[in-house]
Image (tube, rainbow, N blue to C red; front, side):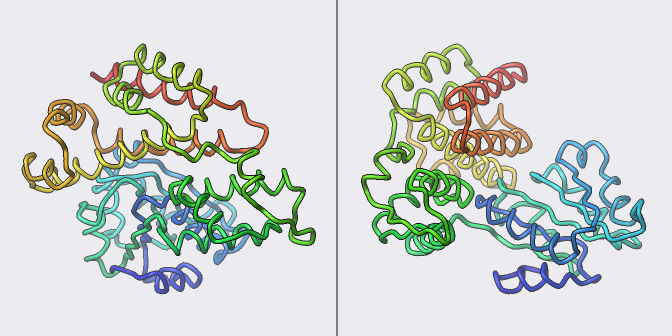
Length: 339
């Protein structure tokens, strides 16, 4: 079943034994995480949580159905959280939905798949599953989220400031929250001790919200050229910029590759996909190489790691750009090893 926002929230708040799988897909991974936590809250603090990743589901497709049918070691409620996953988990999800019994609900997060992917189609067509697309908020919707988060942290601000934060954080709720938490700490603000957030505070400690010349760094990572990536990252950092812009540029590239790969795997021609995504002539060859090199599982895993690095960089008391450097270089070396 394809669910809308109200239906998925209601279903997670009051889980039914008739629904075995809640598939939360799309690029807004933070929103998917919030929805997954609604299921955890509905089941209670004592509920046992089982975590499974894409590699486990691919290597042992029967594991998910087995866990869904198993009793808790402590005799209480249990549920399974799977993710991040992609179409490599198709066999596992099919086994879950076709199993004779499965008393424990599964919430699966698939940030890099599109509505045309196999697992989304499976969940939409199944009577015992729900699929919901989590898209990054844009425009006024993103502004409202920033204003709500700011208000919860005791910050009064304007729509213009909210728009700057939303745009700079790419609509990612988790990143916006970290940015606002940092600003609240700087202004010594809290829900019972409100303060005004203005341009001067944003300029003082806000993340670099502008675009950086990061194209070469993105290309180096996608091609698995760790040496060139190191040079580009060092150049960007020498210019005094934050790693946030180039981490976001990498994320955009990985999402675009995941979308193109899904469309090609779905039967579209390479020429049609390149035209739809406006891949220019000079970019066709490297893009084609990237699509051959990067599997859906690799793209899903890489996107999760880069997003995690960004959130770590924006967290208080972090190691700064070192976290971004380590994550990016590790990915580039992994791509190189896989050929």
